[in-house]
Image 1 (cartoon, rainbow, N blue to C red):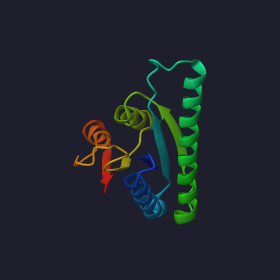
Image 2: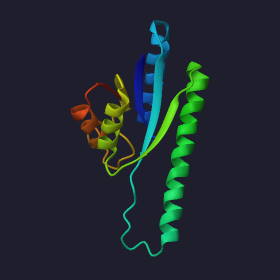
Image 3: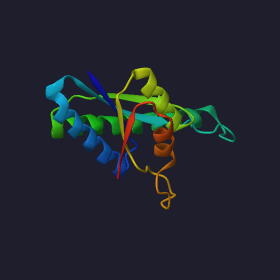
Amino acid sequence: MSKILVPVDGSDYSKRALEQALSIAKGNASTGAVVVTAIHVIVPMPTVNVGSQKVLDDAKAKLRSEASKLLDECKATAKERAALDIETVILVGTSPGESIVGFCEKGNFNLIVMGAKGHSKLKDIVLGSTSDKVVHHAKCSVLVVR
């Protein structure tokens, strides 16, 4: 069984990465089971000067809700475009790159398909910091999609 991990953040790059992963999965379905897992990493907010626990809890709930909505959109895309059911996971971690690499290792994934850049404001970067970290630290193959 092949396992493909697709980190998503809602950026155009991650949407193209999901499309590529679905294409790979659909193309290899005849050779055996292919499992596609879309993940979204939530980076906890700093708690300094928040004011109240309720404000912090509301912010966390909003982040989790947005992540769930994003992953539901990924499921719908997979069903609509490739007739595939995909798995989805929300991770919470201080570093998206480290979280992705760690999840990949624990899950024994064969391939990571991810966007070259995410929602960063630093548009001048050739390769985003998250994808750069994953490319250099993942033990499986990584396909970076532009």
